[in-house]
Length: 132
Image (cartoon, rainbow, N blue to C red; front, top):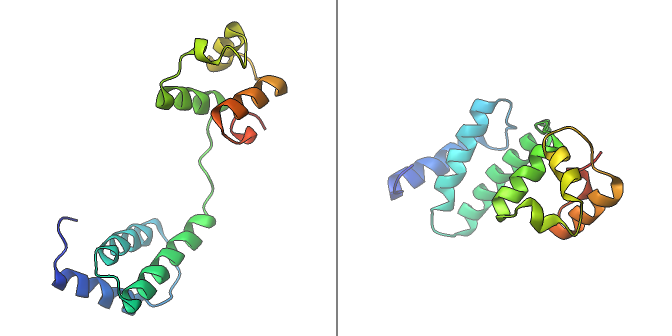
């Protein structure tokens, strides 16, 4: 969006007022509301700006709450977490045997409940990320 100036901020507030409390009904509207919210956040913190910021943020949250979550492979989730945290298979040896972890990451086997619990605790993630 670039640097916000007062005129674009005033336009953002005018658009928020025009939209009022209308729910978001499409991805296109979601992107428009998201851009609008970013502009409102850049405005000075006044009671009116806060009210419109909260209104737009609530509409976004309501829309997203009714959207299905993307499906993913449990092994891909663990690969992502390992990459994100700089972990290697050997770093998780206290939770699962390396051959079992390798097979899981290749999609050749599921995790045992015990291994999933240990990984969940070690990685501080919900168990449902790995099994279920």
